[in-house]
Image (cartoon, rainbow, N blue to C red; front, side, top):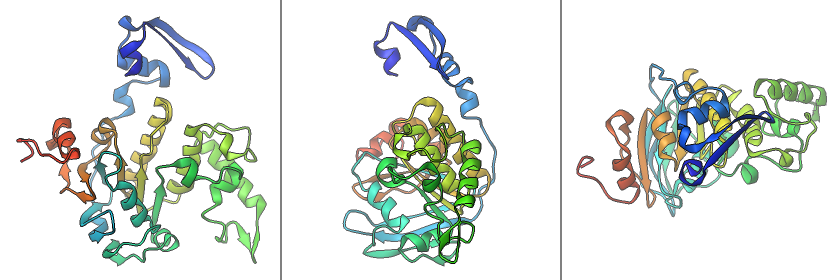
Length: 299
């Protein structure tokens, strides 16, 4: 958007080479996307028919100091988008659902099993988290790519025996993930904080979505990423949805929410609206709800 708003010329670099150089007046958004990622907008967001199953994640009357009451459900094979202006409680809600913050009241269930509000407990029941701040909460920057890929699973028998880490197994896992997720790095021993934001996000995606989760909580998953990395994140979330995962997508990007979500709810001052089918909404309605108002159409 910024290029089309202020630039006279635009040059696209892809894989270290000049892909195109032309006047902005002779360029279209779809053409620019094609140059950047090698395929058009329609291919990045293909229409897909899919069945939405029974509720997998159920949040009932959840309350905390800054959130509540909040009630919603997400079905298997569904992406529920949560829109909101920054600072309206979505961060606190994500921490509560992840088990990182205790609610004052209310319950959460995965597959009718009540969740204990603790990180390891929610992980055991199949919930994974793509955090809003990938540098602060998604990786340990001074650790290697390999270590960050298994950091949540070091207690697993796959990576340790009798209390000792199996470094060969960790290295194999890292090489598989680097190839499968196209993590651009010098190697598995590279320091994670030195990678680009897109490659750090790929580490987090590999660590979480490869587990075939029941529920994926994705908070601002493409913030600060270029269009190529954004497309990769979206593709991975679509694949998880196709595999039956229930996905809660928290985003401030309305384009992302409308392109990705089956239903959309809005959070404002800690309260969440009733989710509505994306096809029945428009951006103006959602924008007004984010500001604490309702349009005549929405009403």
